[in-house]
Image 1: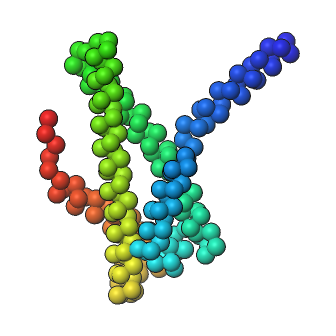
Image 2: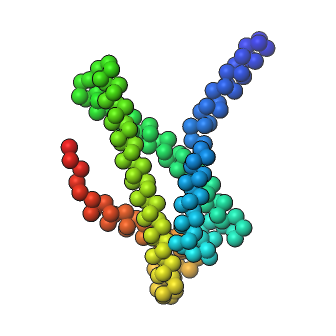
Image 3: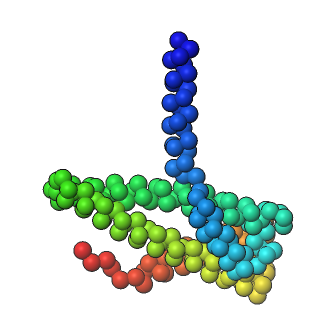
Length: 179
């Protein structure tokens, strides 16, 4: 019985880390998050940045950590979704064997690349939104408080709303995809 429990524990110990690694941020995730947070901090202004992420001492670290974890989880989900959708499309085309595998691989890579391009555009939208909100807060603090409130999360509300508006404008300007 002890040998069976030991074997079960060892096999669980081998499987658990690989499952946990699926969404653990890679060093490149932290590097990209650090660049984004630096640009975001510069765009928002240090005081606004601190109100969004924490105290003066740890705001940058919190931003990097949150962003890296979010991006790693998002990348993992996007890769799975791209592969699933590609497999459905290739199956619908009636492909089998090697042709099916090549089709799935090619379409999944293209879908993941499109998702990565959209992520990059969304990051630019957030940085631009931070700059816009910083200017709006500086130009007319009373109107800013009326529009977004005077609480600690007011700047974040502004950035979120403005980034969504920028993304909608960007998507409206893009040409329709051709089939």
